[in-house]
Amino acid sequence: MPIIESTYKAPYFFRNGFVATVYSGLIRNVNGLIQKRERITLSDGDFLDLDWSYSEEKTERLIIILHGLEGNAQRHYITGTAKLFNQNHIDAVSVNFRGCSGEDNESFRSYHSGETEDLRQVIQHILDTTQYSEIFIKGFSLGGNVTLKYLGETTNLPVQIKAGIAVSVPCFLAGSANELHKFKNKAFHDKFKYNLKTKLLLKSNKHADKLKVADVTSIKTLYDFDNLYTSKAHGFLDAQDYYKQSSSLQFLPNIGIPTLLINALNDSFLSSECYPVKEAKNNSNLFLEMPKHGGHVGFFQKGGFYYNEKRALEFIKEL
Image (cartoon, rainbow, N blue to C red; front, top):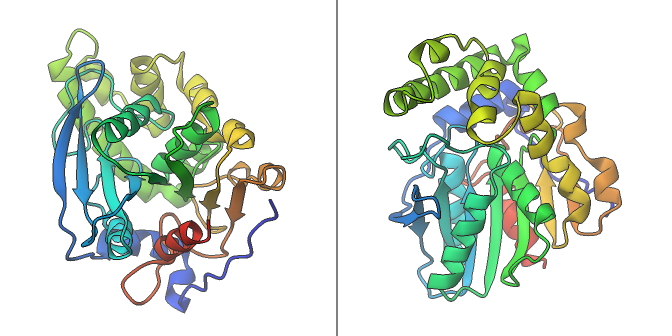
C-alpha cells in the first residue's frame, strides 16, 4: 500500500519531539470519561483488569485499547481515544496489562512487548460474553507492537476483528532499545527503569525463590532489566532473544486486515527500522503514516482530542 501523506500539522511549540512527548504524557488532561472495571481470570490463574466505557447509544461496535510500557487504562492517551470513540457510538475496553492496574499480578511473569496470548484471551472473553459484531484494536507504543504482532501472527483472526491502529510503535525492539539508552532519552530511560525496578522489588518479595533483592538492585539499565527479568520470566534466552522474537516488524507482511501505523519521524524512541516503508508498500492492508512531528505518543492538537485519536476514528469510518 502506498505510504500515506500525513495531514498532521503540529503547533509551533509542539514541533519539538521532547515537548510533544512530555506534555502529552504528563500535562494533558482528559475529563468526563466514566470507566467500569471488570476483572477476568486468565488460563494460568492470573488476572487482568479491563476498564470499560460506553456509548450513550446501544452499539455493536467496540474498540480494544492497549497502553504502552508502564502505562495503564487511565493514561490520557487511552482515555482520549476511549472518549472520542464513545462519542461516536463505539464502546471501548481499555486493557491494563498484568501488574498495571494498581495491583501486582499473582504470577512471577508480567507483560512484555510480544505478549499476545493475554490479548488473545481478552478477545475470546469479549466474544464469549458480548454481542459485538465489529471490533477494532488500537495499541500505543509497546501495546502497538502487541497489536501488530497479534494481527500478523494469527492465522485465523475472529471475523469480528475488522481493523487495527498502532501508534508510536517500536516495531524493531533491538533498535528502539538502543535509542532509549542514548543520552537524548536519559530522562525517559531512567523513569522507566525506576518504575520497573520498583515493581520488581515487590515480585522479589513475593517470589523470593525466583528473584533476589540483590539482583534487582544490580539493574543499571533497561537492557539489564530485560536481560535479568523480562527474558527469563517469559521464556526467552536473554534480552536480545526477547527483542528478536517479539518485534512486530517480521509479522507485518502477514497482516490481513486494514491496519494503520502512525510513527512520527521525530520520535526519539524509534530507530530507522521502525519506519517499515518496504513492508507497507508490499502489503495492501498496511497503511503507514509518518508525520514529521508528534514525538512519542504525542500528536497534540487543539480542541480536546489529539490527531492520532481523530485519525484512528477517520480510518475506521473509511472501511
